[in-house]
Image (tube, rainbow, N blue to C red):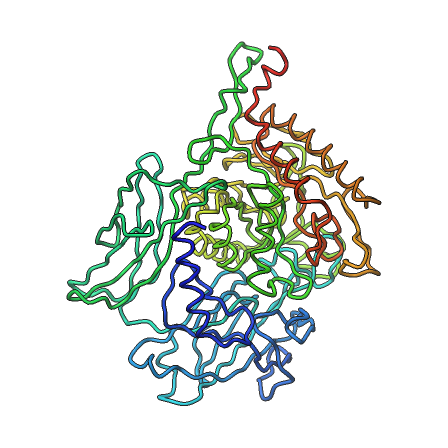
Length: 618
């Protein structure tokens, strides 16, 4: 690894050693903004599943945080449902050395509504299943001794209107087990009254510079905010909450060279550091660029080209798997940090350079590993609806009616919006805004995807505008798989099983957002042997058949690249519940030889360098 990456990993390991050795996911949960004084609250908590309005009196058992109640690793494995509340309770102590500091209580993610009490006093409420949140609990703490923490969670899943991705009350086909409650790390940290709240670093590759904006709390007159960029050693610095750092001979981040710079931010008062966070950033640029190698003449004799995706001003075909981030024992939550990293490492080993994170948001450490290992990410917004007739029959009528629409898959005409109420829309913007805010500092993310296949799609132009205003530095794939409004940067077609672009628009970057889904059953490695297991193109009988189909589709994809396809997403990284179309089984057993996959995938990526006109002798 590069020097900075090694130093950052060592720093995190030092902090890990302070946590209890027997708790799950003990790693520091926020790699981009590290402070030394923190405490991990994962592990055994008391729990109870009660009627929604019933008060918590006594536990029904113990649950392992941060695993959802429906998961095996939680030790509960019970579905909660919309008419029940999931209660958590535990005690904790505050380290003595934190005296005189503010104590923040952090939740990585809780699905969906979380009410928090500390020592019987309300700390706050948060809605949204995918973004981190925190409360300052200092004034709710007793002066010493054991403190009491309670959390009440409500989660309607698909019986309500909140973003919930692939979760449904009645799992089937491409719809999976519900995830209720705490599913990311719970932790505390000690901070000063005046402190760094967040920062955003934005690189300008063309000017060899880095703009850094810092949000700080309770700055006093005379306080200094110092920002220092490190390349092993400090290379440049500036003071202020909005600064531009000039970087001589910048080392650019890319999948082939994922270089990360250290970024230290300090607040000084009369020359003394009163708060400091250690983070990192990268210098890279994502953009759309016209491909001068595929110019042809239209009927009027005008030369036409194709828009491509460019990284650091160089056109690069983006190719990767659809990654849904589900685990056989933890559902939304990987069992260990090593497991979280494993899927990314395998994706790189297979020769891909991109991952589409599908209808789910991951913990911060997943994006950190993408940054470190060098893989580009297309980030989906978890959907608020779907097209499933079967699922609609099990929902309240008003919920089902609000998410019915027409999905135009292979046409610019005919698609309709869902008739979602204003309350749904308001919450969508709230949660999508929180997701963008908490993730836009990760260099690996290159594309935002607000809608998929028309599921809950509404007011597309306004959603694209909102997304671009939140983050103007990345491309927006407005509607992956249909119901196109041509308001974003990308036209994204889905076609199963073989790759096809049935519609095309030269004003946009044209991509194949989903294809493949070649099914194969690995005996002894399936989630539900008695279930209706399936793949989009049926189930291959042998790995030779699987490889033959995969390679045949790759050859077709190469021809599409010649004529303007700028990226492709293969379904998918792993089997998920009843879906057997992964490159690995649900428990991460590989189905194909990694070196063979890598050769095929690298050949696809490199094929864009060829000129199709030359190939055809024109």
